[in-house]
Length: 87
Ligand SMILES: [Mg+2]
Image (cartoon, rainbow, N blue to C red; front, side):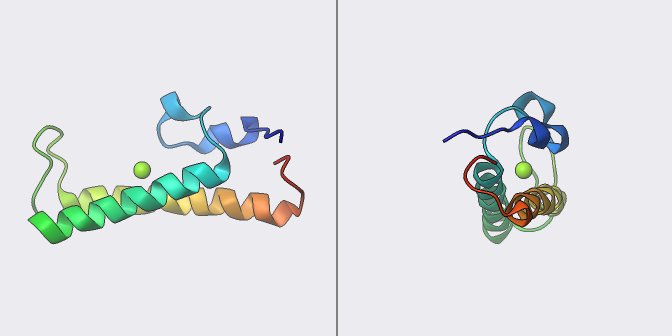
């Protein structure tokens, strides 16, 4: 199974990881990051923050939702191509 990932590397949110993973792996990863952010909010509240980065939970969730929307668009593009596993 050959997977050409070069076209998908341009829109990764963190450039250092742009070359890693298929569109569907990245979609699944961002789904998990949204879930993690939701769980942080449920445990600690919207206005709590990460002790190291100081990022507020509501801002973190918005950032993860933005990441997820990019990955959804990427996955939709692959699905719309209608090809086989050589995406
Ligand atoms: Mg993310």
